[in-house]
Amino acid sequence: MVRSHAKNNTTQANLTHYERSLLRQAGAARRLGRDSFKPLDHCNLCLVRVTDPVACSQAHIYCRECALSSLITQKAGIDAQRRELERWEADDARRRSDAREAARARVVTDFEKGMGLGSVRKAGSTAASTATSTDLAGEIERRQLEAEEKAAAAIEAEESEARKAKIAAFWLPSLTPEAPLGPLKAIKLQPLCSVGTAPHPFSRKSLLPVILNYPGGSDKPHCPSCAKELTNSSGGVLLSSREPGGGGDEPAKKKKKVDGKKDKKEKEAPAVCGHVVCKTCAETVVAPAKACPVCDAVVEAAGMLPLGKEGTGFAAAGGAEVKKATVAFRV
Image 1: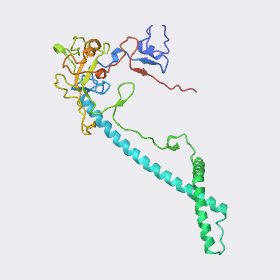
Image 2: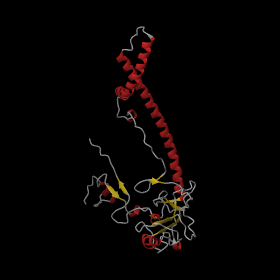
Image 3: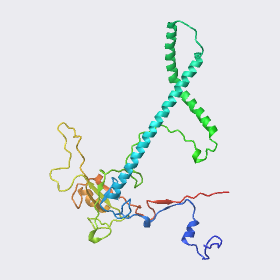
Image 4: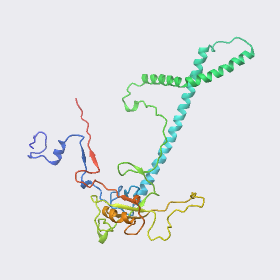
């Protein structure tokens, strides 16, 4: 490719990699290659080799310290968000109450004007006056319920028209009007693990132990069954169980009472095992025996979790994507 001297800094005949990247289409998306992938045994937060590794319910690996630090940070943010939501709900309830009172006052005023109650009444009998006031109260209550929403909409329209006259430059950030928000739905605030395609719940009690095997001082994890190296291409399977191996008469099974009811204070057994094996050993050794090949812990199909990794294992695609967006100004 021949280049123009007016567009480039040097007089070389060929374009450099940087100059060639400038000619690519703006906003194009590209998959990250294997050089940008995190190794299999590295933490998803600090991006270094894990120390005292743990994993979430979907087998995303962390350092224990990083996981607990993330939980503390998220819980502090959740408390702040909860206080903000409570403040917003209180303000919203106050605004709705004020609007309801204003609508009721508007309905009563319109009704009294329509009935001619604003004029001076002539002296009459006490009985007739009492009957009239009773009928008036019932009629006002009925009309109030029917016309409350209509009056509130009219008041809101009048306030909106009044604001339009005061807003001269509504496109400025400091003068942009705020749209009223509707009632908030029930929002469950809880710490989340953001690794993967969709965030999922993340708590200290749900952390799973992880045991990586480094034979002979190797810096790469290996399968403890077949001694195969575990990488992003080959992947790994995390074995999780609630029943440790070598047990006698089912100590981890839950016992029910005579009446068939479970004890409310009964707690779930802690997670054990945590060995990471290759996919081949998981399918040929662990699945048929339903036991870990290292500690003999009982491993069901639900306890065989694919260890979180980056990439898809194929050369043409990756799990991470980078995009570049630019704004083109035209005259």
